[in-house]
Length: 344
Ligand code: NAI
Image (cartoon, rainbow, N blue to C red):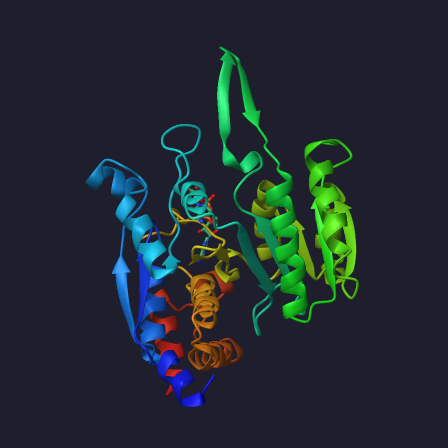
């Protein structure tokens, strides 16, 4: 492509769907928006509400115009959405991923400088299947006192996610892909996932492959996580291992993510709405900011992503403006301002 034409595209105004979300969501997304705009990225943000807020305003948790906005723009930055425990509406996060067929949930786990954590050298990526499995919450009461929860695993979705993991490994110079499963017990469902893994792996002879039973994998992740590189797994396993891995690098405030599909991509942190600290302005916006950096790279704003990342790493290295979850005293907005000041 002609260089002039290319820079034209990259400097174009972007329209991005923005879902501030619940709890700490509005605090951390507004910090991220400030930083992205300060880096010179020209964005027209289309703001939408989902979940309980949408239920109250429109009588539905996943309004069609929000879905349409993401389909039209093909990209969204999303804050966490609360899901009631044990009752109430079904997960909007699950609904959104299904509605847009955002089948690949990519969650990099990389330690940042100056953050007290167990594994400062850690650098791995979780690739989580995002559309099926036990996490779908397909449940019903068989008779009072007996419930059934359905775990659907298909060859199509398993093959697709495993392929995504190997392609990701190849494109990003990663050396190994590990399939995480429980096929010793769930011989049919996890057995099918593993079968798809073995089949797809044959097309990537240059990438090492291995599989690990999930219970052992948890122990290995805590004891010797450096042995892992890219890990691919079903939906629920990915949900749980993502939080475990966030804990290895200093906590949930540092773990970003992207939900990728053919129709678009939704970028969001691994963490939830953190009701225990919501409204106090003290949440760490790093995870959503790093999700925002994944988003900028996805839309071709590579220079802006690098500029923000460099400033963010400098703020971490300096260590004076860290949020409370990392032992600092800064609030969300101060942390964002420090990054903006660093960008100059
Ligand atoms: P959580 O991830 O919201 O919080 C767990 C712990 O980590 C809390 O102590 C919280 O204060 C801390 N934490 C999380 N993010 C932080 C940040 N950025 N800075 C500093 N500390 C942070 O998990 P929890 O409490 O189990 O879930 C709360 C709600 O979030 C639930 O309704 C859940 O369904 C929802 N949720 C939504 C997600 C999404 O929208 N993708 C993902 C996970 C949970």
